[in-house]
Amino acid sequence: MNESGRTLFAEHRQKKCPSCGMTLKDFQKTTMLGCPECYVLFEKEINAIIEDVHDGDRHVGKIPANKKLSIEILSLQTELSKAVKAQNFEKAAELRDKIKSLRNRTICCGIQNEKNDKRTSG
Image (tube, rainbow, N blue to C red; front, side, top):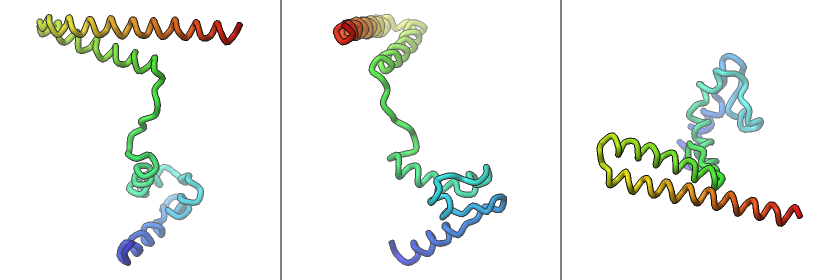
């Protein structure tokens, strides 16, 4: 980090909340803010920390496989409705078949899980 970067960082660390007296240095130690005004005052710094820690500003955690399929089915159903309204029946038929295939997959996965549960519990 160059000298101007160090100075800027030092200035940010000295920033103090007028309501509760919290500084960025305090936040870095405790990872907790003192009051709602701290969120406004330290917004840029907090966002930078979150983006650094989480590789972006959105949570992209894992979704269980059955939930992924459900979400995909819902999305396809929305597309299907749009295709039918637009009278694009070829597209609608393709989407219907995809939905049917995914539903069969979720049923198959459910049956598979039940079989696994019976083997492990018995």
